[in-house]
Image (tube, rainbow, N blue to C red; front, side, top):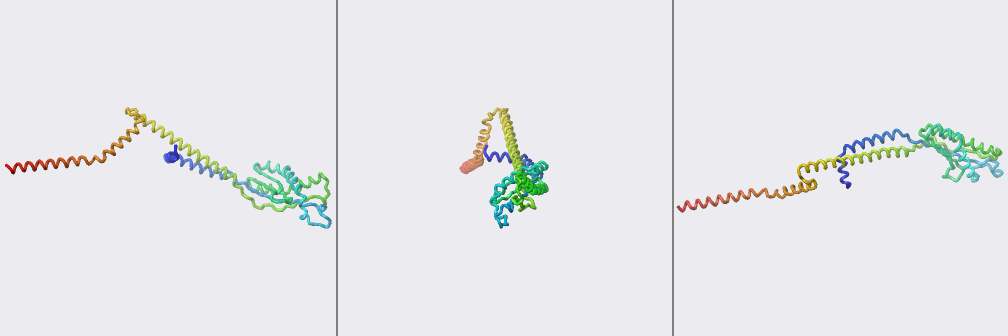
Length: 264
């Protein structure tokens, strides 16, 4: 079956295609409204060295951040696996929380990202994780009995006050539902057209068999009949020519009779 034949079949079963398009639109709208967007909030925190780790007479910790990169990896891993994060995820299914070292910078920066189904959940989760990071860092240093002057501290740099909407999940679900129903409707229309056309041919062949005509020659006979009609069309003027010939013959006979009468 060629593309043109398929298109003609779909045009013949336009009502099936129309119903399928309407259902696809309804399904797409329902999917879009049913699936909420994902709300994303992020925060960043910086690790600072203790005053005891600075050279004598130096009081600017921002100049000595290079040695804290490995500590940032450890703190991020511990903060991501603490009970507070697990409790948030269990309380709000579908919430995703990631705590990693910020790959966009070479400094000891912790990047916290929360993805939730509502903005309120995202805001609460980001605040809890930000507050939990210093607690986990202090617990790690307590286990090693580190002196206060040598302890690493945490300073919050940024916290999103407005969420970022992530629509990818909605778009994928809506597009999948719409495209699936459209594809099914086109397939059903093609199958229905094929079944109906096959049934019509079967009925035509049965009628031809009842009349004693070979079904395989029925189409050829019809073509021959059309050809005969087209050939016979130019001969419609022949009766006019025959009538003109009869008139001329009668005129000649009249002239002969008139000439014979004059001689007598």
